[in-house]
Image 1 (cartoon, rainbow, N blue to C red):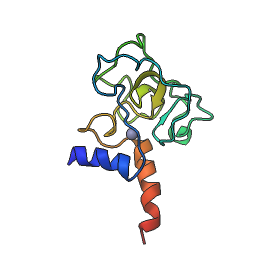
Image 2 (tube, rainbow, N blue to C red):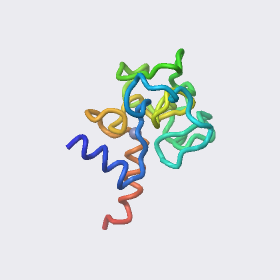
Image 3 (tube, protein in one colour):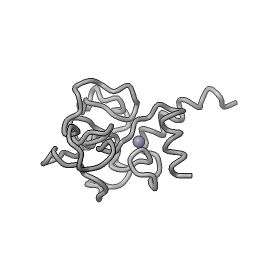
Image 4 (spheres, protein in one colour):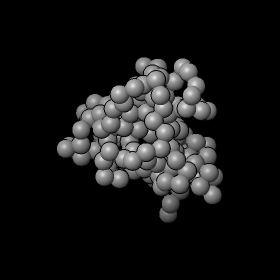
Length: 134
Ligand SMILES: [Zn+2]
């Protein structure tokens, strides 16, 4: 079911993967995201608080970017959140690249199947489904 919901995130809501590799952590060509804004609602190349896609979900006290990467030649893989889980910000890595791209929370179902959807993805899902509610 968890995998099915992740795939539904792609097919029904246009969400991007929030993990930072395409197939394995040891592949090349995934160090820096192209400087082109992805269409998906849950990843961005912009970490500026004032123009961030999901900036309205970010507390003004949250550092931007919220996480950075010392070595962009390796993928991050699973790990411990540098912030309180559920903190929305701009975390480095996602959309199959290690650096130069940001996601809204440290963990999300679009990053790891066992996690719930992050607030950014939840907002996208709610917006897409709202017209169908009575
Ligand atoms: Zn998400």
